[in-house]
Length: 256
Image 1: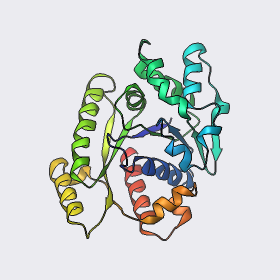
Image 2: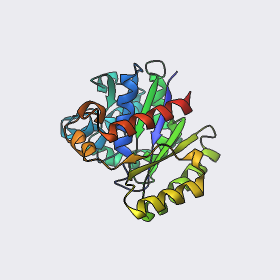
Image 3: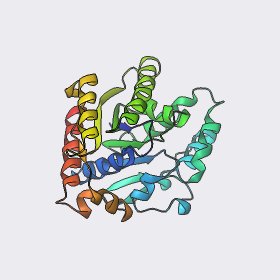
Image 4: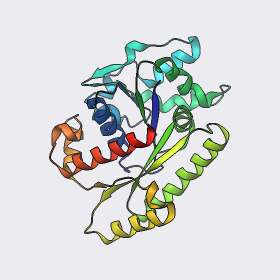
């Protein structure tokens, strides 16, 4: 039975896709069967995986619309990439909110679709858009666990309040079993005062137990994504690789 983990943030540039992609890749390299689902119209998870969105003919939008119309499960849309499997996306996913808004139980379409893969994977990781539309709601409804990345600046802390508000609404009405694993501080720099103060505020507001290991600023993250490979394979000895492994191990501990 697959455990589904969603990475969600209200603010773009939060490191959400970096976390989702690298967590999925690390879990796969630990011999877990992993599926990465790219629900973001920016298609950054698809690009991280070394795929070109413009070349994706059957992505999230196409397979979900097909599922809605006929109940078809297009397994051929899944792409095997290294040790993990990816359901990529293309520019058409921007229209998915429109497709879902007038459908009864439109918020649970992704959940119903992913249930067909429940025995095929150990972990399903979902990358969401930074908006709070039906695509994001679908992602939350489909998930068992939520991880929220937070850039360590005060504007991001404001965006965090919005994500937390949606989480509480969804968990209290649509998915009572959705569990918040924790918050991941992103782009931490011990030298930057704003970074230290934002981390302190995060721990004060939510409690240290809810704050997962931090991801320090590291140029290797950007370089790895531009090469379409996980950080731990691109630069295994860099500090970001160590941080991402620590984050993944903590997530693994909390979902077991």
